[in-house]
Image (cartoon, rainbow, N blue to C red):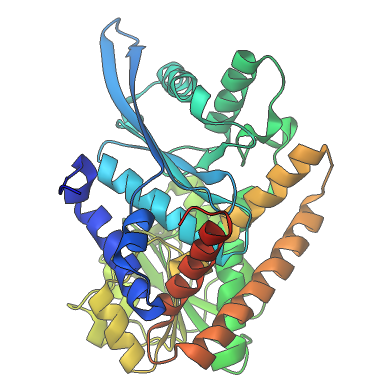
Length: 426
């Protein structure tokens, strides 16, 4: 066959995702033609979204939905609004969702959506119009048994409510299962709001049991006090850990004796910045990246990608790193930490609480069942605890020469490939 190139292949984020697949494929002994199947989406939709601004100007926006692989089930993944969104990033994110869902043992494939827009400049009315028109544009390609979107960067339960309503109007019935992380009044669960941070905390708890002799009294630093970091810190503190530092984009606070996380949450909500938290013994520092180098037992990078790099990795002192964010550790840093004996729990395992809770919401929507938040969190706890230890055991038995991330990819990709073979695709 003749060589060909497609637009997204030149994107560096996509290239990183492909490299991860190729590395795992070498260990699994997969042929090049199988790898080629794995690194391209089954379907990629691009849409034009035209909205009228409040000043009567017309704005033309471009959006995408990448449906990477459906061997294990319907596509599943969020939608983000970002002025830096690209088609390559969207495809890469959908690929990562395939592996995350596979590793979590969920009956889902991977999908991802994005719209290139700065949502901060939109009025509430403009945001609603954007959301409804984007979802109407992809309505033929999504559905409760086809592709189930959810929130991501700068989307939230309100946006999901607009998606749900727009799709329900188009199909003519209340399609609860078309999106997850909806408001509680229309079939959602409050537990979905806390679930990614809760799952990250669960991963830290289980890692501490296996590596540190337990969580009680262990020091924790959380880089990024957004939705994931807030709830990771909250639950770890409730379970007996000593959360000594948290950060946001404006700086970080540190007290080796520990922080009152409930009060820090209140300060963050009321003032928008953790550095406004005042208490005896608390140091307030401007460079939030310095938090990564504190002498703690557990470090949770829960903000942005590529914060642990070859430039700072030698100064990392944590014994366990649990990735609440997507891609916070570069491959070079990951290898260095592994060689030094630091356990890095990779993002596709550690932050799978959100999509796991989405499965709980979706499956109950499909059956018409009612579930309390306590029941939902208990189910999440059981599912993630079992899966975490299964992955950890397999890593230690078969792939301990590699970082845990490599083992996680091998396990996840192997499951997808086996499903594709069983279905006769390859």
